[in-house]
Length: 429
Image (tube, rainbow, N blue to C red; front, side, top):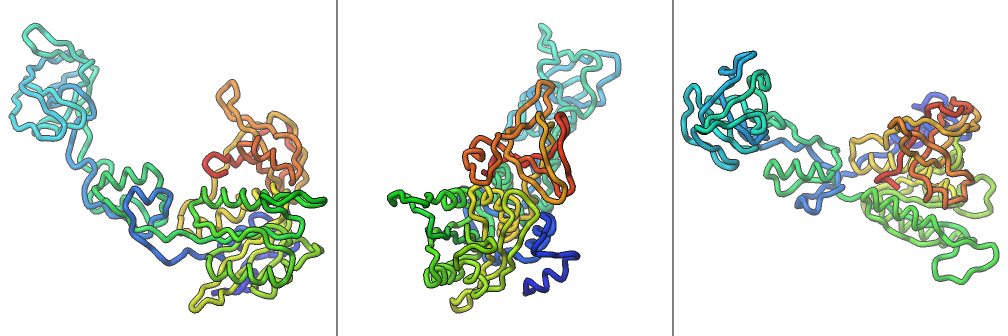
């Protein structure tokens, strides 16, 4: 396992006092590793988990050639360009069982969606494209159908023996349905990631405590709990820890003993009059960053060793204390790192392009995350405006926003009508 100094040496131009967002994520990608434990779960219990190995399909999907429409199955070779075609139905093929008859030239079979294609037939005409004569024959108008239309081929979705889902795939509702379509009742997944979290600071009040001058109620604890729960982690809530060395040491040791990752908020800024930074240094291999970003400049990352027998190191994320900065640094750095630890092969939340409806001030040399509201413009394109006050303590702005406007490191001022990148919150926050 590489030390933080070794990881830093691999990054050209690494400077913990002036770190770009890109370099910070590159560092974290080298720092974290996927958990090793796996378990096998019934599909109903596997939503949101991550596949621990490739799923090789035991069957073809669909398992046979079948009809994509309600209509009539026929041999497509009978179709002649520019001419209608009249056929005599000789039976009905229903979904769930094969039709056992034979079909001669000039004949067809009425067929339902999903029914197996009768032998020798390769084309389906939708029922609405036909007219029925008094004798029961059907007529297909000229040039409304081509040979092979509306036929699903065996294995056109998934072939037997192929990889249906790859290791690292998060199990979405669609993925669960796909596994069920293969007849698989269980699936092997990585064990749930365990993440311990606590807030630090003498000025923090827990819910239920009486207000006092200079103190604020702890919102970060509940925000981070929600973010981790949405991510599918097992959350270990260690509450609020006062700024006392013995209490901090006990909290860090308990967290390292129980969790794969530790998240704290507060106490990582240079010059803060508390013991959190000191205790992090004392108990682990920790780097203190000043990231070229807004909000969320200070951050600590590293590893804390567990004192449990055979215990593994826990990855530490020390976040700033301001509520919006906590959420932004979580989305920008912690969430991608935790996904990697969960074994997920998916990339972070993709950025979308939207037109800014207002002018935005921005200095090159740092990445800015401005809270924004994305909507649909009259022409159907996406547009975005800010929520107003962008102070890092204005938590209400994160409720009003449905995304973050991402203004990149080298980017300057944005004019009205200029396209910007947006990180949309849906399903994340």
